[in-house]
Every structure is written in C-alpha cells, then in structure tokens.
Length: 168
Image (tube, rainbow, N blue to C red; front, side, top):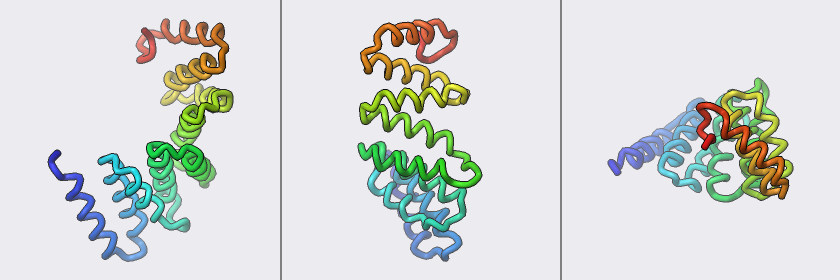
C-alpha cells in the first residue's frame, strides 16, 4: 500500500476541521469515500452520517448511499435498507436512487428474505444497469425459496444469454 489513502484521509480531516458550513457536506462525503476506499466501514459511516440533514439534496443523497453501502458492509442490513429508502425518497429523484433500489434488494437477500428480495430484483429488470444481475439474483431467490423448477428455467434462460457474465 502506498499510503496515499491515509494521506488523503489526513488532508480531508484537516480540511473538514477548518471548513465553513458551506463546505462541510462535500468534505464529509469525500472523507466517507476515502474511508470506504480503504474498507474502513465504521469510519466511512461516521463521515457519511456527519452530513447534515439539511445539506443540498445531491450531497445528502450521496451521503445516504455511502452510509447504505457502509452499513451493508458492516452486516447492518436493516439500517442499510433504511438509508436506501431515505435516498429513494429524496426529491428529484436523486441520481443514485436506482442504486438505492438495488441496495434494498441486496440487503433483503442478505437477510434471507427471499420473497421480498425477488420482488425488489424484479422491479429492477427494466433498468439496463441492473438487468442481468437482478435476473440472476431473482433466480437465486426462487431456488432458495425451494422453487427449483422455476429457478432452473430462469438459470437456463440466463445461460443462453449471449455475453451475460452470468451465462455458463
């Protein structure tokens, strides 16, 4: 490791300590991202949570998604769902709202709540960014719910999808 990540964190912490109110949200998000890049999830979460609720909606959404990701990485799936839900509720919609929807599905899957996870993945099938992975995870939801026939049909269809990273 080059130490560049730690140097960035030190610089961001200093900048945040010296910042005026107008710059705090942006610097807190940047600090959260720096911690996340080093997989220091608890510290990333603290930085994201430092963004004021009245921060500009773009930065508030970035902080909510960062917190969602950090909480998922910490195994705090219910809390992660709450942050993703808050992200999706922001006016706009926020540019990361669809990622928030995918995060909800992933957290439901991690909680082994396969029926609502499958529904959440199914809602993402129309989004090109998530279509292949959502279809694959929805098939796994069926398999894990003991619907082996439907799961096999879905896995077979995926296996025939040219260029899919999930085709075998």
